[in-house]
Length: 172
Image 1 (cartoon, rainbow, N blue to C red):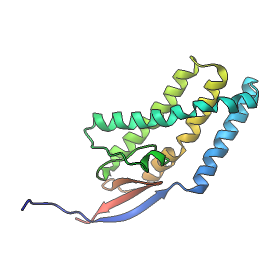
Image 2: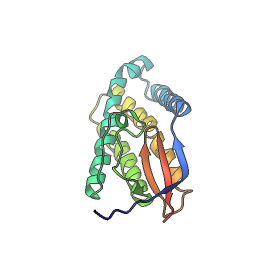
Image 3: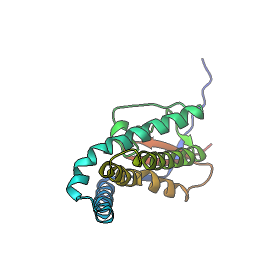
């Protein structure tokens, strides 16, 4: 029989992204589009039509997380429900350290915002503004979970769940 180590975890905090979070994302997206429309003198209807570029942000976030996890030799997992979570496919086979979580989330946030800024100059103005607003809105779950992680003890572990991130502490 193989020796196995079994850990039991105590839940410290679960950061959920529910209906209020989705409404906040929609409000930030709408406010960003309205502000961009006024500042750049682009009709709001043109910005709304160009929201089709919004799909780039989740794909960027997915790829950036996978690339960062691969660079740190962390095993990732992908399930159908993680593709529809606010964390866009971020998932690991086991709970990860708090430092990995913070670095991964910061890498994905900065990478997607900087990628959107880099693509802005190559896109038509309406698509660039829509991409910038989408990057701001779709990074909110990651940003708020990163801020929530600052209140957790250094030795805790983080588990990606569907529509939530759980901060756990081993009892051993």
